[in-house]
Amino acid sequence: MTGHVALVTGAAAGLGKGIALALAAAGSTVVVTARRLAAGAEVVEAITARGGTGWATECDVTSAESVRAAIEATAARFGRLDAVVHNATSRRSSEPVDFERAGPQLWREHADVSLTGSFTVAHAAYPHLRESQGALLLLTSPAGMRGSANLSFYAGVKGAQRGFVKALAREWGPGGVRVNGLAPLAVTPALAAAFEADPTMESRIADKVPMRRVGDPETDIGAPAVFLCTAGSRYITGQTLIVNGGRDTFL
Amino acid sequence: MSKRVALVVGAADLGEAVAHRLVRDGCELILCDPHDPAPAAARITGAGAPVTTLCTPLDDPDDFRTALGTTLRDAGHDALDVLVYTLVSAEAFVPRPLATLTGPEWQRLAEDPIRYGLTVLQVAHEVLAPRRGRFVLVVPAVALEGAAELVPLATAAETLRALAKSAARRWAADGITVNIVTPDVFAYGAEHLRGTDVDRGEAVLPGPGTAADVADAMSLLLAPAAARLTGTTLIVDGGALMTP
Image 1 (cartoon, rainbow over the protein chains, first blue to last red):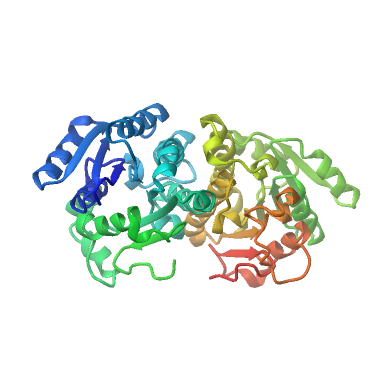
Image 2: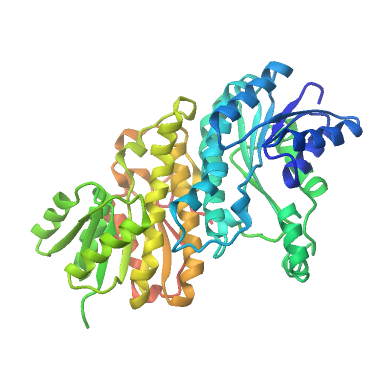
């Protein structure tokens, strides 16, 4: 994949880090974006240590200016942009919501990153993806398809991304730009903390997964993300790939 | 037994058709819209049934809670049996490539409509719980399959569908069901979209689907026989999709 340039949002840890490492291992030049530059730089160090190529830049996906600056800096530095992975999610994502009483601000905090963020990332990346016939990949969740009693706002914004992917895939298809979703189950830092607090939680989740384990961000989720960002998936668009060990077979 | 009390949010053509149907089914009706619902209400009243109107913004759940509470009390009701959400602005059906949208336009076309639907969903539980009522969300089927140049509409509709499913999970134990009806865009009167990407021409039933067809399908979800249905989506598209 000589010359393939991919940008990942929220890439300092968890799924974003796993996907960044997998993209680099597959030969992409990876732009690691994070709200804190130092955290992104650590991931680039890991990429470099394994013989890959990466570059870190600051990006707050809740700011259209910040998103645009990160994408334009990438294009200026590498001369192209082939894939954008919007992985960043609100810190609030894993907190249960009192749905009936939650104020507009709590919805805003969920929506800023996943919903408005999807728009601003897609909008800023479009001229470059059109030029490269590239791919946009959004990290969504089965919660967006099934709904969630406790993580109801998270389910809402993840559903948002699914509608967004399908419509935008139809819009950008004629220009050769692909738009897909990936709905993973993996041990993110938030989930790892939850497992620590509740030692039976991991097995409770794993029991519902036909493959009887919770995925790894790099080895289980990274590889399918690479596939959706690169030429092997060139005839796939508007789809959501569910990568969760068979947990949801009806979606 | 006293009459069922129904609230319809959204007084455009499709909401009006739903309201007509509910009146025909014997409901006492409240018609709500951020813009004046009185003309639509007058047409229904002219057909012989009194309609209460509520013109209120839907930006904030607390404000809506207060406004709805006042309207219910003034009309002599203590709760709702039925709440049908149909609100979609006419502007949402105007095709716009995503690349041409500004941030504020995205907010107005995609995110404000989500806010309005979420406001109503948040307040719905307390007014439906006393009578173990039913909620029906009506959103265009572009939520399910997308459509070029209608990204804000598809996004808003699919967000509300996910939120409605979440509500269905939360409220089932209280006896409240939440279901979804997804008509094609032409049932909303969006004839200008004929021949565009959203017009797949795949319906197998003859003739165009109408707002009244959607209202009739919606009423199935309110029948006693539908008590075991919740979180489900009824696709009213003349047999175009046939999935799942």
